[in-house]
Image (cartoon, rainbow, N blue to C red):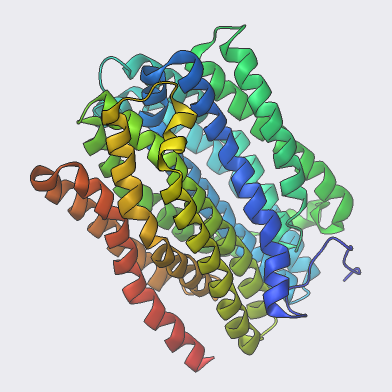
Length: 446
């Protein structure tokens, strides 16, 4: 196998704590810049078009998040397959993994785009979007879903690069595209008067360019990405493995969003003020989710490489290190979000009402203290998945779904908006109660 490039990180050697941290920091920054796509949309929409337009973007955000979660999990599973072969120094297997990922991503993009766009109107009816914002909600959601291919493209190439040990390249181009996104937001909304659809087009174009530039650099730095005709021969087993790994991860991440969809539906039924307040709060909440997802990406690639290399002791050390890093970040985010509750709302709205503040404050005050449970869930679930155990994470995902829906739908009639606030913490606790014992049982057998 050719000697690795200098930007390829071998996670099977070196100090686990610093190897993980060095790998994770660019991923965290990349995820935060990715959040800027939607934050820029929301801030610019709220400031220039008003509270109703912000509510329109927020009312459909969970559907968009649902699709993006599936894409992230699906392509993340491909990354695990590639990472295991990278750890085993299997160049032929790496090439076939890249080929299988490419074919599956193309097919997946076509099918998903057709389904999402054809069901757009029906989705709005299912979600009980208020009539006064339904038109703008459709415009925003349809355009974003039409650009699903850009999201698949970006996630596929970035997960490949991270599996090969390069977490910096996706960051560099996310920084560029985030700045471009803000510029295009203002251009499309203000002088071009494209409304909320302009914000959606800005997001798609920016993400596509990020993916394209990441691919160009990846092809330059990693010869294994230069596919040959023979790499596509006899892919049946490899495609089966990628589907076996990718689909459960995509399904698990999207199932979590089904519970959040139930939460959004309850909020939508409370009126525009509730939607606006919940939207502002959930945007802040996404910071924690994306940071924890970044740590998931780091520990996923770390465990996958070391699992492929057969280094179980090193997996234990890495998981402990990742827990320390993740929970430190969660503590910082909890304190920061609680102290900045009102400025967070003011980021999105020029003149928020007391009612909007009420809904936003209530959600953040309840959810933020439970970020440490989310951190445990992120690290243990991803570690188990990266050791080719998909059953326990899937079962935990179903526990999350049941508890989230039960809390939201079952209790909304009695405690109203409070049911939305407590749903996520209860779901995280339920999932952890299964995953933590499973992880330690697996490690005792390793």
